[in-house]
Length: 72
Image 1 (cartoon, rainbow, N blue to C red):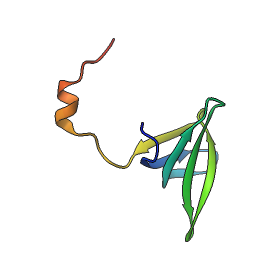
Image 2 (cartoon, rainbow, N blue to C red):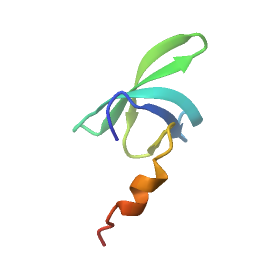
Image 3 (cartoon, one colour):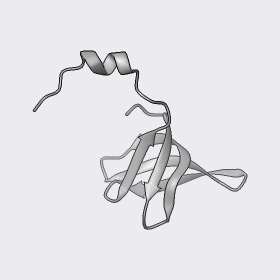
Image 4 (tube, one colour):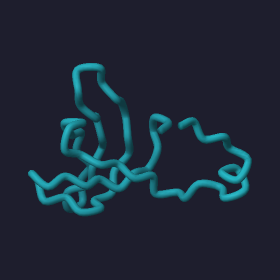
């Protein structure tokens, strides 16, 4: 996933179920750095990679997936 991608954040510890954010960094220390909106303000947050799911808000181009090779 590219940095500065708009994402939906799922994290059961915080009760996030599709909260909107922007991925800023994927740290080798085991966390995602994401700007998230809380109320009317944007806050920089750190989510542990273990237990957090990020989904790109923009769907993949279907034609690009048809040509992709899948490694097994």
